[in-house]
Length: 131
Image (tube, rainbow, N blue to C red; front, side, top):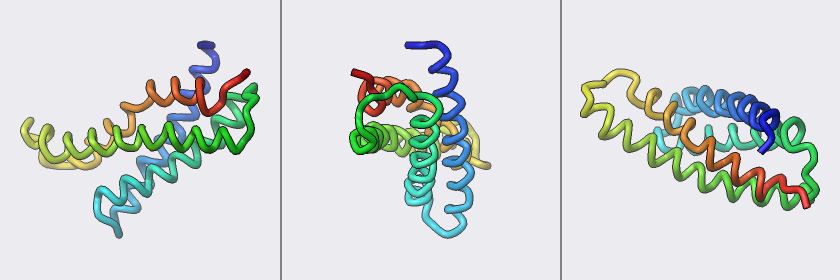
């Protein structure tokens, strides 16, 4: 792992996470919470793909088709993590801790943050690999 690459990955991921997080708030105006999380995740995933391809994993040698396919696969695993964490926190953990305001927003923030490590490993070894 290259430390500079990790920093760029975190910046790209942070930008994509912000797109994910804030678009979920907009989607929640019209969609149920779970569907809004999925729609927001798609926004974040598209943002992340292009930022990672252009700025982070510039030396990748696999084709864009393979990059996109693996990127989607890695992110499908991550979206499951995001949904499970968001729902468990929003429905059970935060209310049990006495939190009742902004529960969905807090829970979704944690849900978006958790897959960072698994995503970096997946993207560096699968999505944007070098031969």
